[in-house]
Structure formats: C-alpha cells, structure tokens
Amino acid sequence: MTQEVQTEAAERADVHRVRVGERELLVVGTAHISQESATLVREVIEQEAPDGVCVELDPPRYEALSKSDRFESLDLKQVIRSQQLSTLMLNLVLSSYQKRLGLGLGIQPGTELLEAAHTAEELGIPVTMGDRDVRVTLRRAWGAMPFWRRLWLLSSLLAGMFETVELTEDDLRELRQEDVLSRMMRELGEAFPGLKRVLIDERDRYLAHSIRSTPGKKVVAVVGAGHVEGIKRALGSDAREDEASIRELEHVPPVSPVWKWLGYGIPALILGSIVGIGIRQGIGAAGESLVFWILANGIPASIGAVIALGHPLTVVSAFAGAPVTSLTPVIGAGYLCAFVQAFLRPPLVRELKSVSDDLATPRAWWSNRLLRIFLVFVGTTVGSFIGTAVGGAELLRTLFS
Image 1: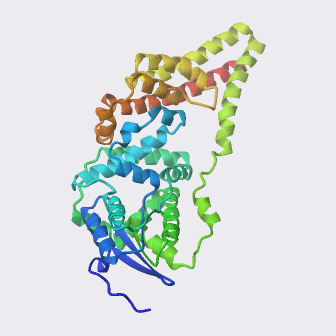
Image 2 (image 1 turned 90 degrees about the horizontal axis):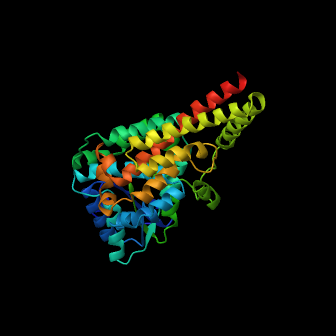
Image 3 (image 1 turned 90 degrees about the vertical axis):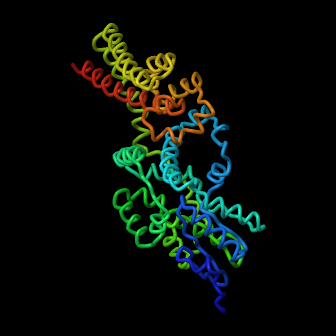
C-alpha cells in the first residue's frame, strides 16, 4: 500500500500513525489543559478527514464538560443516598487541581477533547466516546489500593490542592514528550502500583479496543499523552481482545469479605457484650454500659459536626444517630448527618459553580455549603469511628473484669 502524503499537522511529534491491516489509525497525544493541543486536534481532523473520531471521554464526562450548568441539576440527596459522596469528593479534588492548572493558561481542562468532538460533528464525522465510565475507573482504583495507600493518596491530593502550580505551554509541550511521560508513569507505578494499573494500563487497553471498534478505514483518536505508548503497544499487538476481557475491565470488584465480616461482626460483638454484662453483672450494669456506649459514640460524632459548623439539628442527629449507625453496616453516621445537613442547608447555585475554586481555599470549606456537607461527612464519620473504638474497648473491659 502506498504511503499517503502526510499533512503538516500529522507530521507533528504528537501525532502517531499506526497501521492495522487496511486501516490507518492516527493517535493524537494531548495535554488536557493546553490550548496548543486544542488547536492541533482541530487541524488534524480537518486535514485528515477521517471516517471516525474517537476521544478519551466517557458519556458522563462528555456531558459534564459540555454542560456548564451541570452542577445546577446535581441531585445531592441522591448522591448521599447511594453512598457516593466520597467518590464525588475525590472527583472534585482531581478536577479542581486540573482546573487551577488550566486557568493559568486561560483554558478549561478537557477543551481539546471537546474541540475534537465538535470539529467532527461540524464535518459530519461520527464520534465515539472511547473511555471507560469514570465511576467504574474511580471505584476500581479505590479498590486496588490497601487502606494505608488510600490515606497516603488522599493526603497527597489534599496537600497538592493548596500548592500554587503554574505551567506554560512550553512546559506542557515537554510533558507531551515520551521520555518525560515515561518517567512520570514509572514514578506513579512505584508509588501507587495499583493506581497506575487501573488509571493507566487498564485504560490503555480499553481505549485501544474502542479505537479498533470505531468504524472506518481512517480513524483519528484524541487521547492524553500519557496513554499514547500503551495504546500503540495494544494496537500494534495482534490483540483483538475478546469481549469477555473488555467486560472484565468494566467490572467493579465486590467489597472484600473481611469488611463484610467486620461490618456485621463489630455490631454483634457490641450487642453481645452488653447482653453478657447484663447476664454476668445484672441489668443495672448493662444499662450503665449502654449509656456509656451512647455517650462514647454520640459525643465525638457531634463534636465532628460542630467543628464542621453543621446545622444545630445536624449536631443533634450526630449525637442521636452515631450510637445506632455504629451497630448497623447499612449506613454510617457520616452519610446520615450529610443527608440531614444537605436537607437543612442545601448548597446555593453559585456555591455549586464555585466549588472547584473554593476547594483550594481552606477558609472557603466552611463558607461553601457543599464543602461544609463534606466536612460534616468526614467529621461525624471520624467521630463515630473513635467512639466505636473507645466504647467497644470499654464494654469488653467491663465484660471481662
């Protein structure tokens, strides 16, 4: 087959041509906060006139990027009821950090992906959303790390939120180079091997499968530069991965049986201890132990709500709810109190719009109602955990004394 004449844009180092049989796949590596990348993808699509365009987005992320008023329609109570508040928080932290980098360059994160989709639509070219659902990715990433690694990651993310980072287009151009990215991926793999496997390696395979599945003899794929080498390896292999292996990448592993045993075992141990105290030492001693359990759980949880400047009724619900929620694996004190706070003090539209900016300002965590809900969730969860540990230890001491 004769080699086609390459256009000026396609000759860029950021554009990689991969031949797969009779098909020609152009993989464009971008920086998600680069105006230069946004310009490049438009030029490549216009000049190459492909049969299809595949972008590193999933439908929820595409909708979030393309709708500036997405937070106005956010059903926060449903998020809390489905116990996805921690996932939402992690997503906001990541987007806030990326947004702050992009604002320094006058561009919103993901602009080049939207530019690719819009250019294709203008030219009547079909667009494929090629990435895995971000909710599946986050849940798999969270489940891939042991508990202490999760704490390390969260502390690193929180610390990074308050750093001032400024990148120029020259810096971003360097970040798109293979050697720099390889080093970054290697460092990520050393620090968080489970995280790299889910965020990078699995998505390389998933994106390569999506690119292959995009109809047409010539396809342009727009992806973050960190995925380019992995995607090229997957495309270059004979890897027509079967649907079963791809479906496996969309599977969210169930909660470890250990956590299920703890979820039911701890309440059983607490209730059993109170009953045992009643049998061995009398109803009066059991009553005193029950009162101690209520106070040991209720006081720290309510203190957590007070520190978060929760509504007075949220503080009351923390005191009343923590002793009960600690005895059930169905819902925790944090989710109960967050729901009460969201009901009593729902976030204003302007606060939903400014949350990404407010995340970087510690004082704003207490003034933004959405962030205050997160503070209530964290404060009451930590307080209830402390109360369970203290109360449980005291009950066991009383039982065996």
